[in-house]
Image (cartoon, rainbow, N blue to C red):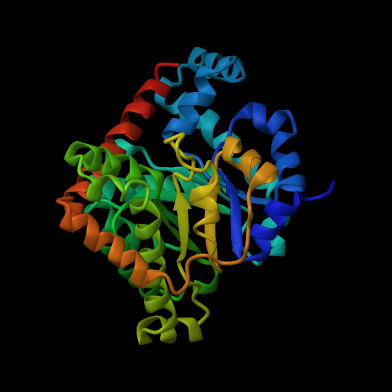
Length: 362
């Protein structure tokens, strides 16, 4: 099959395209394989909302869950078994991409129970268990970037488990996540692990930032405020990429680890589906083209990109000053950005916990 030229251009610009979805239907229908072959997909991310949708649509899981519960398995374990089976199968489908990229891509992410987001020890325990249950070298364990999640990220990486850090909203928290990553790699190195085999991505949520900021701008209602709508999400991600460059291209802490084989923690753009129909439906991908970044893309946005996405080279490097100007203007009209990010983190954890709870009611 032939790769779509728009998605191929995105990949050629250095962005890894990861599908933001997974279901048994996607696996068994061959659709995942088709997206790999025609849409440059080289990875998959999942979250509790993804699996809630998968479990609630159709009957693909009914037989397995019924069989497990009939044998006395509690529903939590039965659902988790079904989900880890899907992740394992997706890891197998993406194994060629994992091998071809030296372990950088071909990754499939699975999240720890979001109700553990404020419990460091329980998060670490479940992260290690999930890695063992999936039992594939190309799995990534997702850990939320809460205050309790930061030491859990370090401890999980120290045990040699690769991590996708999720629910990052602010540049400050992104810096803390990068520090947690480096501390984990240092601990793994001290323990004698092969740190070249430990991978991590830092997932910055994009569209949700605009949703929250735009709501506040519309409440303010002035012309100065309204003209800033739709700018915060991209500006935030561009500032995060500049922070990534500083840590992994300029600071001596990583330089020393790189000499021992350590990988960078790649920035990942999450929540790239456009929620406001007034905005271009590909903007959170085309405005965030940068080397060594990952873009997790829902299928609807993937198809929009394939149809009319314009990839004209990278669109991030060198734009941090303008992004900071956007933030300064937001602050000047009355947007409390620290509060925005705190609300988004709280709501993100709560929404994922609610999705997981509903998934268990399947």
